[in-house]
Image 1 (spheres, one colour):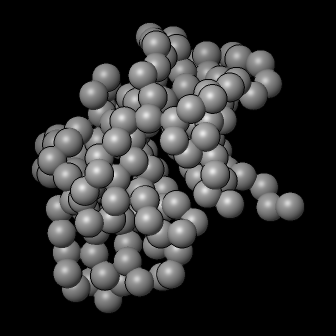
Image 2 (cartoon, one colour; image 1 turned 45 degrees about the vertical axis):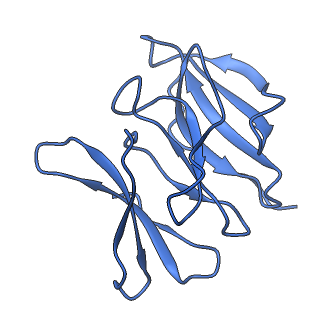
Length: 148
């Protein structure tokens, strides 16, 4: 589920869901299906995984709070340097890198109200988390960056 091609097109990161729905795991394989590896032993939310534009990081939403939302983490494609970027009072449901790799955009919803969502932008280090626009009374599923 949720496959994501590396920027160079050589690898695919994806979520593997065992029969019964849990655990949700982050896996990586070569584009031809070879070299399949389980990246990390950590709870992953059932949402998109996103590669940094330079291919050095994968950003994902943890499944620590709920199966479909949590905090934002990054990890190297070899499974090292797992880093928590947020400690949200709400619950992130989506994350995506900016085209230049300097920022991450994320959607955060209130708990337990799934219909109150806010878009945020932060530095790729997790610093300077700022809200974009107003909190919305609707469920935002996916976000992406526009090109200049």
